[in-house]
Amino acid sequence: MEVITDIFGEGKNLNTYHMCLRAAVVFLLTLILIRISGRRSFGMRSPFDNIIVMLLGAILARTVVGASEFIPTVCAAFVIVIMHRLFAFLATTNEHFSSYIKGERIVLYENGQMIGENMKRALVSEKDFYECLRKSLSMESLESIDRAYMECNGEISFVKKV
Image 1 (cartoon, rainbow, N blue to C red):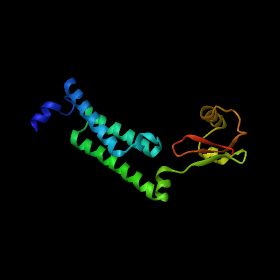
Image 2: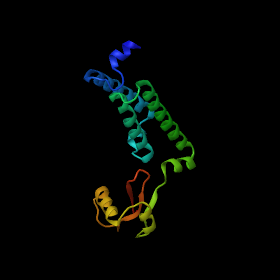
Image 3: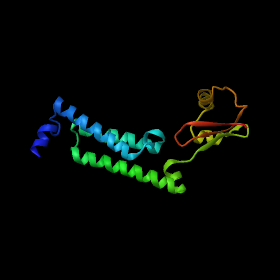
Image 4: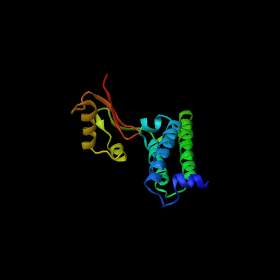
């Protein structure tokens, strides 16, 4: 155990060497943890998926700077990755659980009208709505749009008329 302490340092008495070595190890561990959690962790960008990014960053940073013990902190990060993976699996097999964990899309525009109540619920102004229309479809008018949704990840998607 003393050899590990000599190599990685201990507590807040870390020098540049210790922190660099810890950073390299944490980088590799984080890469492994992210591979375990699956591609959706960074691909979907939903609030459910953003949790893992924030928590892994916050928890594993503590190991680099010596604010927490190395092994317990890595174990905590591993538990979070396993929980994310388990919840994602359960969400794919149970629609009710999925809507509770991930949320549901909100209809913002339908039948030629913006749905004011849903716009307020989604915290989207008309200005925000048109900005998304311009960014995603390079359009300024809703005449060729059938419906618009606030998706679970916070993006607004548009369905063109057929």
